[in-house]
Image (cartoon, rainbow, N blue to C red; front, side):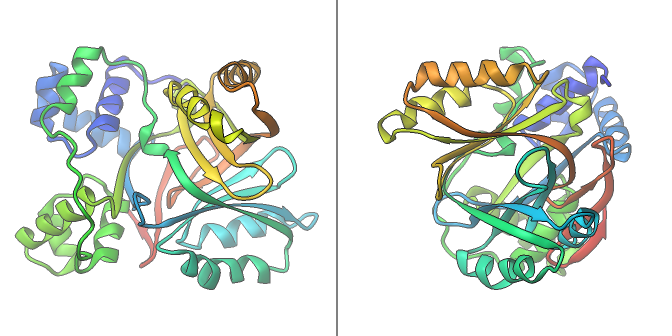
Length: 335
């Protein structure tokens, strides 16, 4: 399945600047703002692309945990249904190898992980075995991946209107959970829409939004249904890398535009990464390139995904498009 070039250009632009105005995007892409807005409304309505938000994991904020699950025979479907309803479990994927299901969990702290999420997994009668891997450092996340359709000049023009700003965390904005929930459903929600949903003044909502984004408390990303991305194969690796070669390994992985995850981890391996690929044959090429950059790398596991049921809170159909249901800490909601 393919999207028209104009759609892919718009998605690439929103990957770079998820909250850029239609006027800014129109100037960068050479399109009329009204045309871009209508094109985006159609993509979003069809569930082919969407802008969302999630708990930030920059600096000392947040804890990312990866869990592999082995289900009792014949009970995977019920496990998937139950775990998709847990808001802290951002992503739920069916796996092709040792684990039936892979989870990505984002929590405000390790304590929240052990107190709110882990007991649910351990108490589930349909789960036979679970293995936890904790991220000690995130090198790349889903918001870093890019399509390769805009020219370098277009990419510069898209990013120019609003350069990235980073500042110390300071005080947590009031109503952060409500703010995050609104942005999960629509990462491009206006200050007025956020204010109406959170019971605040638009000026206050705009200030809280700016603080949450600039401090990394909340992260934005533009998602694209995988089957429309041109990279239908998802593979996650678990590898051992000598500490002296970690920087070279990460640098090599970051050169791939479709890198969706790269994290230093605890456990039997010390690095995990996930890429979207064009064909299964690309798996060998990735491993060969990585070992050329970091000769001491040992590939312990490479796991091809079967289907993603939930991605960063958004429920997905069989064809990888979004259903419109978003599971937040405030409960399920329709976008």
